[in-house]
Image (tube, rainbow, N blue to C red; front, side):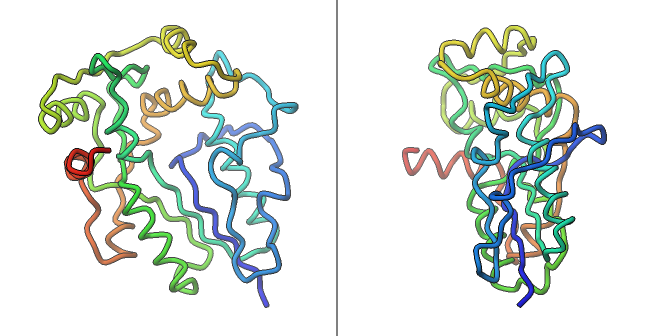
Amino acid sequence: LRTRGLLYRHETRFPADAEPARPRDRHTRAFGSEWSISKPVQALQAPRRRYRPVRPRLKPRVAYTHFHTEEHIKASGMTYTFLRDNFYADFFVALPDEEGRILGPAGDGRVGVVAREGAGRVAAGVLTDPARYENQTLDVTGPEALTLDEIAAILTRVQGRPVTYVRETIEEAYESRKKWPAAQWQYDSWVSTYTSIARGEMDVVSTTVRDVTGRDPLTFEEVARAALVSGR
């Protein structure tokens, strides 16, 4: 029985100069079953004892780990389907702080936010018909790529309170996040979420949700309104 590997993950694009770092085998091992499901995003972080600080270039740490995990799976000879989820729309709905601010160094970059619901339906569709998606890499996005200014404007309209996007420098972003105690790699991951948007790496829109599920992906406004109704 040929082993299959399904890697369900976050982040969409990876720079060509990705630093070499071999992922641990336990992230990609087939556990005696037809499908090997990878660990969640947080578990794919490099172990702390091997962590190398990424400043000042601030490479997106999670994306690099995912990139090398994908390469490791390909080299293993496993049949695979990689689902590259863009950032989740649900995350941005909950992002404004108590003052209605979205803080981060994302510049004027765009992000093809996808609803978690849509990403989940794509994963279910791939698992239902795995042969159709053998050895494919699918970008999973929403129907449009938005700037954080546009996201703030939508949240203002939906939530009925002013929401603004505040452009931080990288130094300001690190400083503002120090109120949450965390390891250095976690701060790097948080801040590089925004710098990847600024560099255009998340400016991706695909038809994957429609192609796999037969349904149009939810817009960011639809996700925001659903969250308001449910009280999330």
